[in-house]
Figure 1: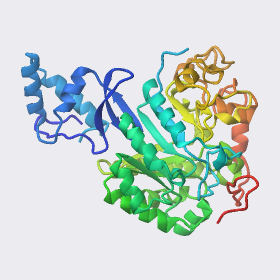
Figure 2 (figure 1 turned 90 degrees about the vertical axis):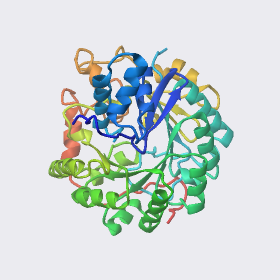
Figure 3 (figure 1 turned 180 degrees about the vertical axis):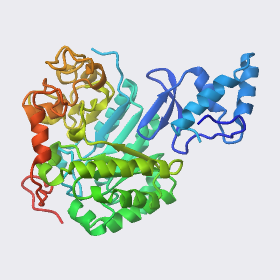
Figure 4 (figure 1 turned 120 degrees about the horizontal axis):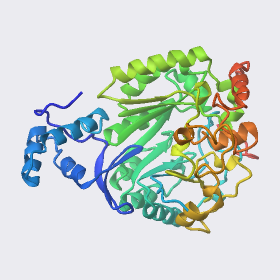
Amino acid sequence: MPLSLDAVPHLWRLARLDYDPARQRPVLLYPEGAVLLNDTGRAILELVDGKRSVSEIAAELSQRYQTDVTADVADYLSHLAERELIQ
Amino acid sequence: MTTDRPTTLLAELTHRCPLRCPYCSNPLDLIRAESELTTEDWKRVFTQARALGVLQLGLSGGEPLVRKDLEELAAHARGLGLYSTLVTSGLGLTRARAERLREVGLEHVQISIQDSDPENAERIAGVSSVKQKRAAAAIVKELGFAFTVNVVLHRANLDRITEIIDLAASMGADRLELANTQYYGWGLENRAALMPTREQVTRAKTAAEAAVVRYRGRMQILFVLPDYFEQYPKPCYGGWGRLYLVVAPDGKVLPCHGATQITTLTFDSARERSLEWIWQESSAFNAFRGDGWMREPCRSCPRKAVDFGGCRCQAFALTGAAENTDPVCTLSPHRDIIDAAIAEPAEVEFRYRILAGEPQRA
């Protein structure tokens, strides 16, 4: 189910963002698993703080990248929500 | 040589354990305390693992709490940035030790339960343990650890899968692993007592699927069908020597925890070699990488890129050659071995795990 733009997502309590020095990639770690991220993924997840809504996260990144990234941000977060890595 | 980097290290800190579960995946030939790696050895192993690419660390055993240096090892792992899981029976997890582990940054605790029925749980564990496990779980919750309950499923508890799932939820588990018995080590020794019926497996699958939906958002439930009842084999840890490595209590570095039963391989020790050398160069880790080692029917099978021929340990244990197709595969000429095991008359007595030459511990 896609996240609505009004939803205020937070990281799964069991997950944390970190950096993998061996692969030189940001990484989302959680019990028995890991998702290697690119810089865009990290930029999105750093704004997932349980305070900002999906549309606020998208607005902030749209401004940073000087282009409307709302659809991409919503897709990305919905995908992670499906895997229960954000809630 | 390989370009793959391991993501997960299972550190079997010890084989010592207060429990005597008949499905234990430890080898029959348990390693004694005096042969275990030292604190400094383990720290070096963790540091090398991190440099090699490991992200996830399992602090396992045996019962890892038997090690007095567990807190020091957990602290070292957290300092390296590893995400650590304490894989424990719960026995020995006092409040003082749990608090110390929390302080040093341990993130995730996995406690095993044997059954929802206390009497049967203790019959399976071979020792009195239910009260201690409940107490340990309460402390884990109170201190805010990420918390997984793990249950090994088999003939003697599968019919209570719904009660087991509800019990895990009432203990406050964030995750529940419903792990069907794998027949290695002590599990293979006890196969006739542990093997479920096909009807049990079918009912359990339905119950687990319903529970996944019922508990969605509250508790993640992982249920994997037992491979004997599947058509194709499991892709063991993403293929031999690709993502996973195990260090046994004596320092032997293994591609999976069951690998020592493949007696045709020689395993190098973290006492003598670096993890990187062993991962890259050792004969054991290179033995079944790629597909050059495969025989038919795997060699020409399109599924070889999906399941990598299944489990080498199972192929060796049941067919006598690790290069053979995992016999659980319905394309394997040895599948009759599996079908015969499923049809075997049930035994009721467990052969409990015990250290050779030692008196039975209560």
